[in-house]
Image 1: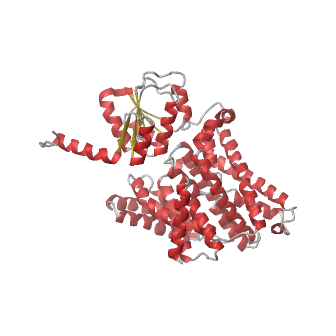
Image 2 (image 1 turned 135 degrees about the vertical axis):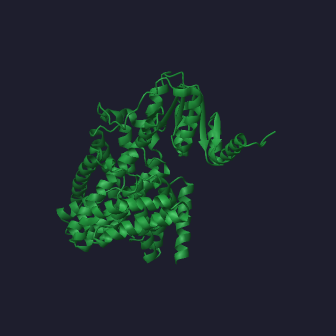
Image 3 (image 1 turned 90 degrees about the horizontal axis):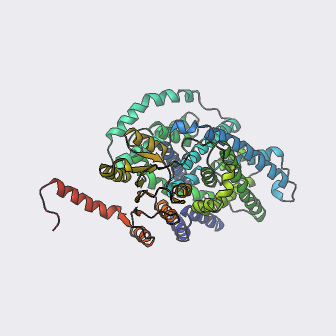
Length: 531
């Protein structure tokens, strides 16, 4: 059956990709389809799922900073939101228990609270997939979303220990000391290991052996171990390269996770009714995220994007529910019902996240009424001063563009990036740079809507995410900006799309890189390269 499963997963993934939805929805539908025709989950699917989750959390750790979790809007916002959602979802379920649906037979308020707690979690896997596809994992709302998810995961670990009744081994207390001792060795190996397949293998070793298996050995959650080890080496200069090398492996293995959700069971009509009601209640969850975060001085735009990213139910909720079922705290029918609700929320959230910028642009006047007067330091919009050239996206390409233009135009060149850490590091190098997001409509509105900053003559869009470049061009076209626009493209279809939008200059990264390399060689050695 495995080749057939692979064919069905690919077919459904391709189908939803063609209609503009993330392939993960196709994998969920493939799982339900297989279950409908009598298929059962097997060891291969479960193994792929576990590998994918461990690698996912490991790569999250590689991109995470501990100091991010210490922000009160993260730990405070996550804690308050989890409590409110648990109570409200529990109240809704207890109210529904007075209906005639058989799933609520002998239903108690304690069961309502347990299920409400399971539904309070948002999906780490889904959120990271969405953020990676949009290249916004390190944006203000990306960091906020991941931080909240990790705090939720910590709550889940406490619940598992409390309800499962299995305390970790006493050796778990030694883990901090072990990690402090082995960290220099792990760094040394990463420094000397080079690139290619050996780097990928080392990533697997760190995530699955040093992280997952070590935590499992002392009675802690294996996935949490992968996350901790990722954080442990996140400060190494090769951490980003390691994360990128594991990207495709992680995505392939996670197909097993999405298939496994669909294979959990096919619901009867009443279970489907409850799942749909729960999925629609996701609106309450999203609204509460927005209200709570704005109370912590988070901008309305950042709060909305975070809310949409986290507007779903979670795989950790399924784990919480499965333990409750094993301990006879809730009926087994609820596990399938929650699994269906999780899948439905993924389907609902996908188009909302893909249209997040448009949604905010349409209702921003109403949303901004919830903002507080003061802002978080990393969540502000800044003025560009007297800059004449703006370079968006200060990755390797953006920094090279900035350096070249800076030699000629000096401080008239301003670099911009949404990553707070990147901005701070480049400022230390003496670069004229500030934190702002080219996909932030409020930035363009404040800069150009009233004919401000007429001195700006060139804007260069060097962001890795094509959709962010497209959105920035659209925003510029809607303002009174009259200067030139240049943007990068990786593929021919992206190049054509930018040209159709009347972008003045489109730089094809791959073809132009060869041209630039040839010119560089010719300028440094005595050889004629052109006539």
